[in-house]
Image 1 (tube, rainbow, N blue to C red):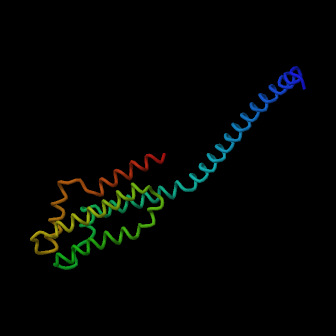
Image 2 (cartoon, helix red, strand yellow; image 1 turned 135 degrees about the vertical axis):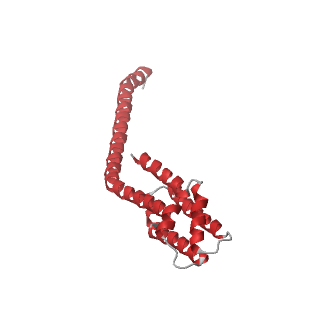
Image 3 (tube, rainbow, N blue to C red; image 1 turned 180 degrees about the vertical axis):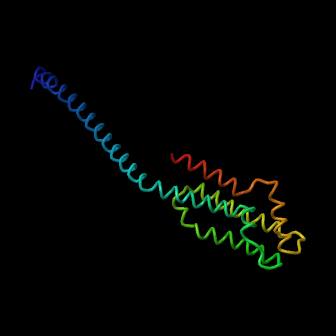
Length: 172
């Protein structure tokens, strides 16, 4: 082969290579767009099915946080005797029972939100234990002490509820 034939071969080859490269680029772009569209539609369908379940989980956790808020807890759970230790244990048992009842909701929410809820539960229990360490004699007096101690402070469940509401807002 002489140089003219090689040059002529390249002259025919270059346009076909360029055309092939452009076709490959557009085909690849089209394939990526289709894959993205399929992924979007799949996500949209799964959102349609999972969003109501996730919202229900957040509702249940909001209810849990409202139920363990100190004012509603001590009004709802009245002492069964005058023993302050029994009342302290009854309050803590009530919180733990509520929490155990809602444990499965954690799979529908973020780890951060679940950790905030657990921290609110623990902080509420700590507040009850701290109030129970006072020189209170009766369960009714302990009830008053718990309420008085938490009146001036922001409730841990109120803080957690604010976080839950923010996270629900992020779902939209």
